[in-house]
Length: 222
Image (cartoon, rainbow, N blue to C red; front, side, top):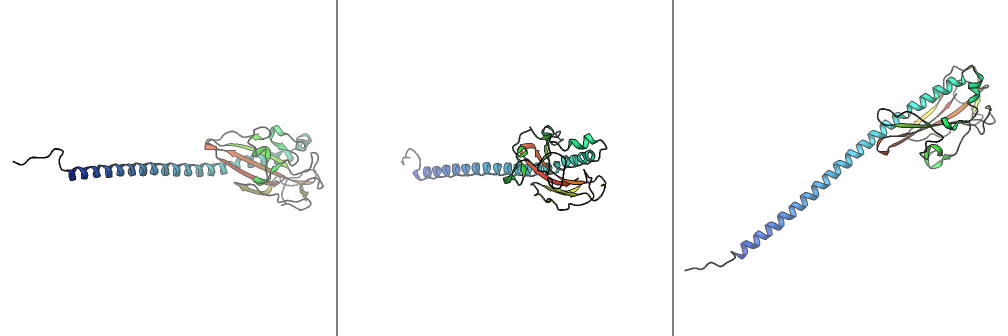
């Protein structure tokens, strides 16, 4: 009679061990591939959300600029001398400065008080439906407070009584440079103050969801 050896065939046991090892390696590879795929999807979703928030943030900078330009124009055209003279003095509580203030060179001329992220010394606008909060600073491009003159302010002598409009330039996402120099004529068709058209620089920072931040700056002559 033939006797069967205990433990089975050594070759068969070896093949089973190799198959088990290969199966485990495949499972490990699939696990890493699955994790990597989820990470890529999350990163893509986060990037798309970031682009979306920045786009809405850039759009949100326009409302403060338009609001401020309208308010400045109305104040300068107001028949009440006290209202017009109020713009000759700084009012940091409302984010208004009758003379230029310190700016950040690294951020393209954005005022330090605005770039620092503080809420003091800036004007805060109401949060919109998306979650953006706008902060603004207005600088009258003059070297000192007081009545504007061509010697102390950026602007030009008014050529007429004006029609209450404003002209200038706006750039989203960054800041503009000072486009008007003392003694040079800015675009016409602006309101006048003491027969001098004065340049104002409006800087806006929008704080949006997921720590997104957008900047815009406009120089208008009113």
